[in-house]
Amino acid sequence: MSEAKKLYIKTYGCQMNVYDSERMAEALGGAGYVETKTPDDADMILLNTCHIREKAAEKVYSELGRFKGLKAEKPDLKIGVAGCVAQAEGEEIMRRQPLVDLVVGPQSYHRLPEMEAKTQEGVKALDTEFPEEDKFERLKSRPKAKRGPTAFLTVQEGCDKFCAFCVVPYTRGAEVSRPVDRILTEARDLVERGVREITLLGQNVNAYHGAGSDGSDKTLAQLIWELDKIDGLERIRFTTSHPNDMDDALIEAHGTCNKLMPYLHLPVQSGSDKILKRMNRSHTAESYLRLIERIREARPDILMSGDFIVGFPEETEEDFQATLDLVEEVRYGYAYSFKYSTRPGTPAAERPLVDEDEASERLQRLQALITRDQRAIQDEMVGREVKVLFEKPGRFEGQMVGKSEYLHAVHVDKANAAAGDLCAVRIVESGTNSLKGILA
Ligand code: SAH
Ligand code: SF4
Ligand code: F3S
Image (cartoon, rainbow, N blue to C red; front, side, top):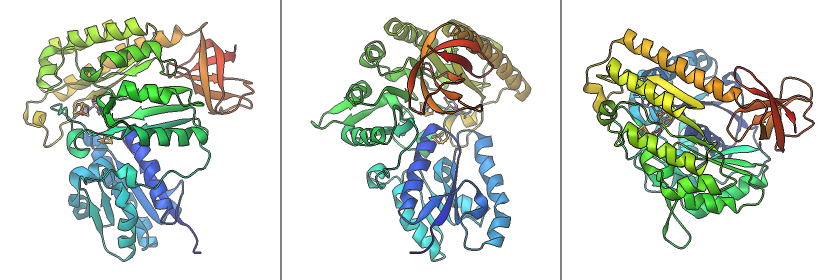
């Protein structure tokens, strides 16, 4: 048998891309590739790209430019672009960067092995369709090798919400959910290979409605209760949720399902009703706050996380102040904030922009407030006992690092524990980005 070819994948963007990259590596594993950590010795380079903001998309072209030298040295090197830039820009990528051999959109990854074969014959390959067949069903099943204690599992893809600023409905297509049985099979397989925590992924994961084995559609809450029955699976998380899809059963599960972790990422984007309306979010700041109240009634210690866009077209200082007020009221344990980035083809792209300096200044103010709460919430963990799922050794001999229920990074010196151990830990110190604990 010929020597294995080497595949280098670089992943940008959200966790769904991380999951897709794993599955692409597995699919190309069937075509004789093993993964390598550097582009230098690769036979194929695959960039799994993100189109969410302008900078993310531009990064791809500058990265591609850097491979020119490599390709000159090694003419057989194949270069591919996958992910959301591939979907959005398709042939344009090959025109702008002739050294690209292959462009594959997120719904066509199961066709990668055939496409790779085509490139070996010197033919360029492009596939950015939204085919009828389920890409995950067609992708080879995951190999049985041992793996780390945490894993992502995509259960839903696409988005029907069409927020006025966002490219996702165009790059990932309409909302589609995977059937319950296939998810359970994949979850059991992951657990057999050492996984103890699964994060269910979807662009709108709580809009999940996949076919159950009895033929009727199941909700995310129902799927979580099915996963709850898997022995050896200790923790379940899900991301990202839309406020309008938080149904009663899902809220209740946060209070009653022990495996469901007390952490919820629930983006709101803005605290101003005028801006929310223009964003086409179809909820108000008030309805969002009342929703969080209900979630906290079900699970009082839940740690909330969110996403914000500042400088959305026509955002005034008063609108921005409403965002700050909302942040004050919610007290997020984590929050991600971005300056609005115009995405061609989206409805908001036609509207008048906020002054760039003004937007930057607002972003700084928002981030300062978020950091304050984040630090305070982290500091409040000192003295408390949490459960830590250890993931890997730390920098020092005997040190282990892992995550608490609340997704805080925790390190324990002389832990005498292995990756995959779930241990009671008393928090003794709060650092910049992590907590220090001792075994309880
Ligand atoms: N489906 C998820 C996440 C979508 S993308 C959701 O609805 O929450 C992740 C985040 O990127 C969004 O929540 C939003 O805050 C940000 N984002 C999306 N489009 C953007 C744009 N054009 N400019 C700036 N930030 C954007
Ligand atoms: Fe984008 Fe809105 Fe869909 Fe989230 S809900 S992916 S922000 S369109
Ligand atoms: Fe980016 Fe696509 Fe995810 S645009 S955020 S990689 S869905």
